[in-house]
Length: 297
Image (cartoon, rainbow, N blue to C red; front, side, top):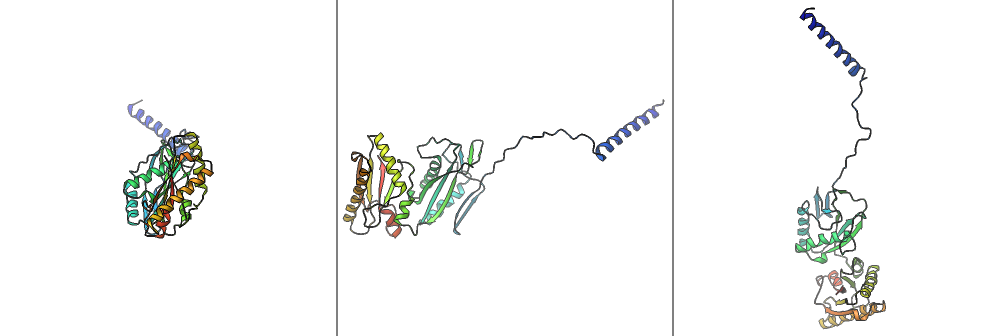
């Protein structure tokens, strides 16, 4: 057979093989598909919840990022939201009538190695310290916590963990101030509030909880004391206010003794109108100043 015939036969065989494959695989679709796993490995998806801080129509801050925390950690990485929280600082300095509630979120999967009641409070207090370090008054902030077991972690990191609520101080009363004092730890001072001219303090479930926990703590630590410091607003005579603040502190002391706390571990002080928390120029500020502060020594 000549070389030409050989080449033609080879070409014919190749053409027939190619045509057969095309007809079977592309037209009839009878060729086996590539092997694919019936249960492909799932890929982890993690969505960062953007930061949003809003105060009516006066303030609206957004960031695609959020605070960062290590799992079971309380120190925040603020790099992704520094512009927004610095803007919030400037807004609060320009609007001293605002009160901010900082909510710290935490999961039951986490371990609390802090002295705070839970990681949520520890996280919120850390953010509060950031603002105070930037020149804002500590009493402009209230810290609370919320357990959220739906929190997502990625590589043992949490993105978020903090929420903000902004409100006006207008309309604040002694009752709302008393109810705003939340028990977190006996190591966090608690303010007890009074109506104007009264030595009877406003009782809440949280200050009752504080007193109960303080009783147990003092029983276990005989070298520790509770200091009760009385304060007033500036309505009336300064000397009379000093006397009234002392009476309020003594009244609370008697109530604590009646609740079973040892008198030897209770001490009192009277500051009168000389250590206000808020300006006495407003009704709300005067209400905030009528208080007895309890602190562990």
